[in-house]
Image: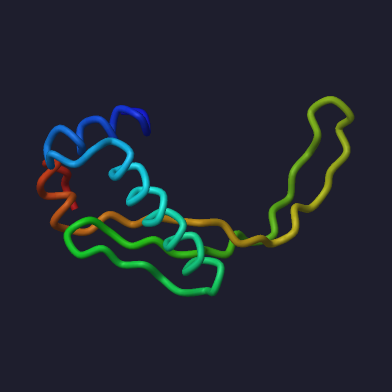
Length: 93
């Protein structure tokens, strides 16, 4: 499902105009981004948790040049699905 398909579906389900749904969705995403930038976790009950995770230093070799290097540690966004979401999807824990 694409972003525009999601907006259309929520609009149909709620009776709100697509423009209103888009504004709300954009604000939710921006709020999550800002919280993650500040180092906070964002938990949505029954859905999951967004958080920044630290990726450790990693060795790699360029396949063309055969030169080995190290990737520096970095922070990346991560998501962990809640148990409720997993059970609704029929996933095994």
